[in-house]
Image (cartoon, rainbow, N blue to C red; front, side, top):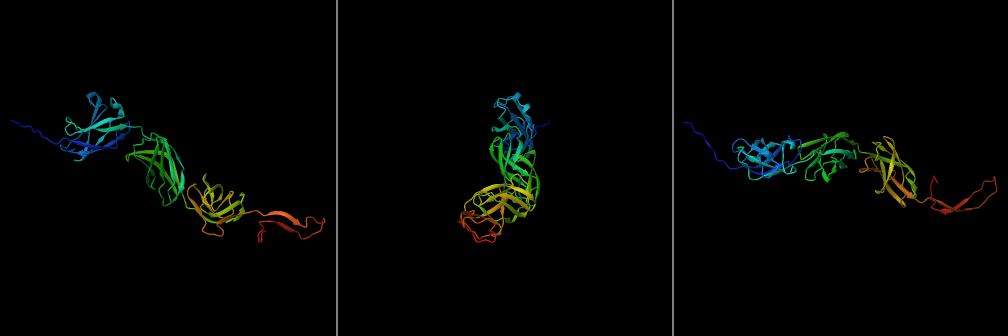
Length: 323
């Protein structure tokens, strides 16, 4: 005479599913947490398209118990499910493939995001460059991170279904970093984009250091680590930004904008966000001044061919060897 044993166990209780999204292609691991998830040493996950979970509307896949409070299941392809609402798939768990948890979690199939553009694509080693990532299928409820290669990974802020924002991490050296979008900590979306880190700029001096209020003075800026970029610029007084012309690694040129009288700082930027200026308060500053104006001369005329002293009467004359 033989005996068969039947064990009574506490039913599985499910609380959370991570991530709650997945690709329509399936074959992605999903972590389900709860209690009593390994009472028999085996576990199954059921994906159902409708709340009635009829046989023709469900897919059962074996799970892998991590411990009594968590199990891992692999999502089936969306095409294998026939249901009422393919955007809200119900997931429940069983430890005997017969009795299922009374609680059901919701899983959604979503299109894998795609990255089409990144701007800007350069920044300084110090990091902190605000980068806009453009693409498609950015679901608001999902988590996004941007990997800058070996430099590091930073969180991205959702702005719309087509736009994410992040700040570049600090890099210990100049060079290029390949960009990868990470979705829900599990899905890596490769891109064709590269972010280039640039060396910090040093500004030594300006020539000339004076010019008229009307602007238009061509200023030569001497320094190091200048690079020809679309955002290469000079900023006057922390506000007025003008485009700069690249000459060499040690020299750029820009034209002064219109400003009020007085001394002002001149800063240089390669990326349009981080600015550098000279520590030399003599040759690293630019002074705006009135142009001299002549109102009359004494005498007003003189015989042709005869050299005479002429006195100029006007405004804004200064005692200068270069006058």
